[in-house]
Image 1 (cartoon, rainbow, N blue to C red):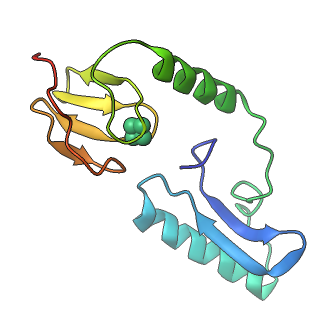
Image 2 (image 1 turned 120 degrees about the vertical axis):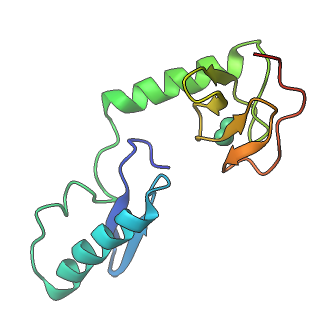
Amino acid sequence: MSLDAMPYIGRYSGATPNLFVATGFGKWGMSGSMLSAMILTDMIRGVENPYGELFSPSRSMLHKQLLQNGVETSRSLLRPTKPRCPHLGCALHWNSAEHSWDCACHGSRFDAQGKRLNNPATNDLKNPPPQ
Ligand code: FES
């Protein structure tokens, strides 16, 4: 997961012109890997890609979304509610449309009985409150 919810695709750094990176797909690896292949192939061939700058690992992270993510994560970590995510302890929110406990921090999800539906949490939720 990247800070601005966009993958990092491109040169690892300005000091390493032959080292490339493709990561931060936010659970969209199948489509992100195809996009990465197109961008990195163009970069290696010296062809300008119209999306190269957009996904550049060197792009500025000073966006409004970064501030929003920081506020949401801080609020979630400080909120004295249960249940807490077994991944890193963020507060879970009941999703009444999906009937699941969802974690806003990194995307883990659990069913109403606490069984893990999505990573990165590796454990089930213990004793979820009834809904
Ligand atoms: Fe919930 Fe990371 S703290 S997924």
